[in-house]
Image (cartoon, rainbow, N blue to C red; front, side, top):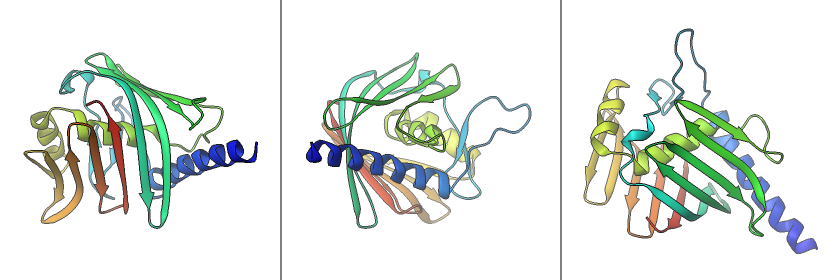
Length: 193
């Protein structure tokens, strides 16, 4: 029983890690008249989440997430269904128990969980997902509007602020690695992409 509890605590720590990254460094707010969710990719560059129709190709399957922030490492599992209708994620602990559900449909982000605190900012998870799996041209236009630049060369995607590399994404057949140089975190998604 102690081993199972340890796995659950590790998963909870992973989620608190994500909360710390997305909550401490940034905040998500919508100003009056603005109905589309957004995130701050830097302290001064707002990225408005793209509509679901810009996904490169539909995804429906299991993914394993390995993350690190400083010296801390975390592991978590998800079931992801993403297509032109939206994004649905079921977050699972290492034993397969449901830890929470995240959804992005019709420009609305929702997150329900009995485990994660309300301070978890699911918009940042959606933003990272979009940077990995959405159409490069649509991302380039959206990031340009926010004052950032986007490039895709082969399996490498990069987001720059002027000459500074902010985010780097390497996509392979069965893995995607995200390295956020500005915020100091990285994680690898493993699955059938």
